[in-house]
Length: 308
Length: 301
Image 1 (tube, rainbow over the protein chains, first blue to last red):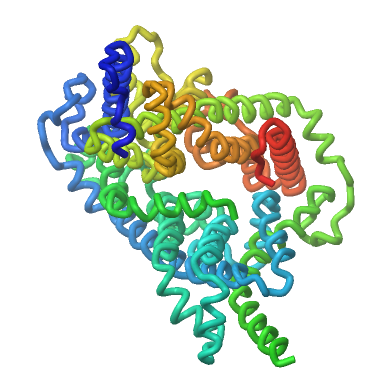
Image 2 (image 1 turned 180 degrees about the horizontal axis):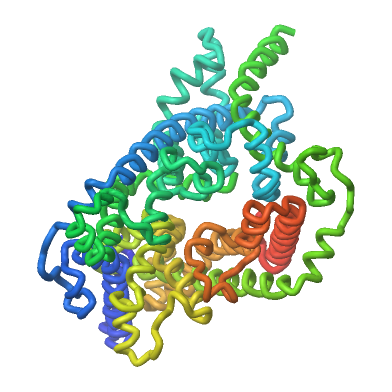
């Protein structure tokens, strides 16, 4: 890392030195710009969520919130749909991640053992599915024929297992758990299953974390499967509820009593603010957690890049 | 003999390990592939797949001669290639910049900041686009108006759709995509840089002669993979961004397949279009891979 900071400093050749420092200044400016561009939209949503709609429309809300009030938060936090969506998403993500990680790692381990019969044929059959798929309609028909439409099962299972993730894990096992390790364990009378559970897995904490992360994030942020395979409102994950509110512009349901006309009018006025609040409330978990998970997904990318 | 027996029992257990994934792949990938044959039939639910009449390439011919075909293809390809051209080089540039940053704290901070947009869901991203560019209250609309752009109702304009789509994608994925390049660059042996410095190279020259050559293999692989996805234009983001007025540029093959398939219930026709899409994708992937093999030593296989 220090090597990148080194510039030529021999014989005081002033020309070369200033090229490097101009370079330094320019890239520092670009980096700061990248930082601000990445964060400002999110920051804006945050300050807008506690500002008044009139001030936003007037362009007064740029770096600081204006006319701070939390009434939109009150509306959103009372909206049952959002909490049901959250509960559903947590359920689907948890189940999908546990299931997917287990299935993926077991398969990856099996395929990483060189003396598995038919190993290359199976790999080819699996990789083939990465390039060819039945498409929307045939897949829907299959799911429908299995009676999985409008169930929680389909949302927990579908998307939990991917060949891509399996290949990453397989590469890891191939590099980290060599045959010799098993042969040594075998001499002590350890079967392959026991080997997997008591030796291979404890050594693989990094890849377990990476795979779980990839599957978890994918489940948390998905709406497509829910939109296609479910119509029941109570099954909707958070992202589908968000789609209703943010994209389709459906208003919140918690004010339906005609006598609460005043509350209704207030909600109309802050309709846009409600959207900002919904964005904050739904994205906060991942945004707050991801910096701590940084080292895991960086590692995942690196393992994945060692071509399997 | 005993070794063979233990090998077999080991294999049996390993196959048990493999079984759940195989079941999953059979259900979610191979069963639909079997059902894909309805692209060559007139699927009738009461007759079942095999009982439905075989019509060969009739659906494909219908699609190619449809007035919508050219526009769908054009929209899909334009959006995809535009996205590819923008999202390919920028992460590389970012990685190079981050690597040479004198201030380590800034480097870490910028890295972490650029990953943030990746963790926003596509629904939230499009939701942000919609509030930012709301015709009356959006901050984005206000900025555009102040910059002198008249009629800044970008959410409805067909001409604005592609730019919104691609550049919001750049914002969201640049940081994440740069990870692999940053990792590659930090694997460069310091001796190479030492040698370059001793030879009088300034930083720009070091980028060109030391860093870029190291990145090229990875970049090519990723480029091949992206090219292979050119026709795979994701349904999710486009679908959310569609409004009635911008459909002339925002209707792509995947959204069309959804609309006529699940909503219009033309199962066979929709499957045929999907298959067409898939095959073209595959052909592009193979061609780009072959080209990369000839042009450099790097290829996917």
